[in-house]
Image 1 (tube, rainbow, N blue to C red):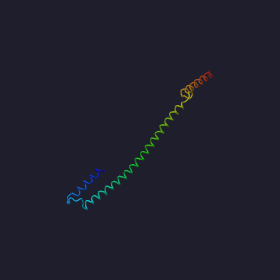
Image 2 (cartoon, rainbow, N blue to C red):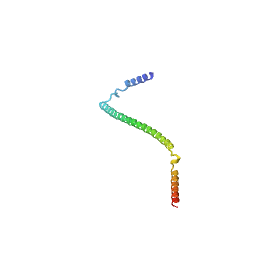
Image 3 (cartoon, helix red, strand yellow):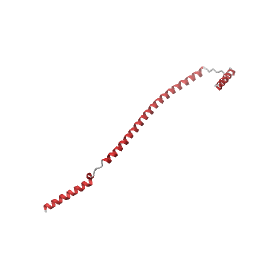
Image 4 (tube, rainbow, N blue to C red):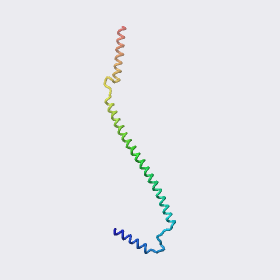
Length: 121
């Protein structure tokens, strides 16, 4: 606080001791230029604020989409695990195998051919 008051006192004394020709007043054109510059900066700032708002909405929707994709991925991986377990449980029993049915068919054909041959002779 003490340093601020010293700085203010120094600035005040320098402004009093300054040459009256070096006026602190600015002319009308400079004021208008500064005013116009401030207006243009306010306009660009408001546009940037709107753009920031739109970008925040886009980021929020993308985060929501990422969350949904992660949840869907979890569900899909759980579903794949369940299908693997179901495939392990649904293995055919030994009498449902194709090789065994082939042997049954071969034996049936051989047996029926033998019976037909023995009946005809």
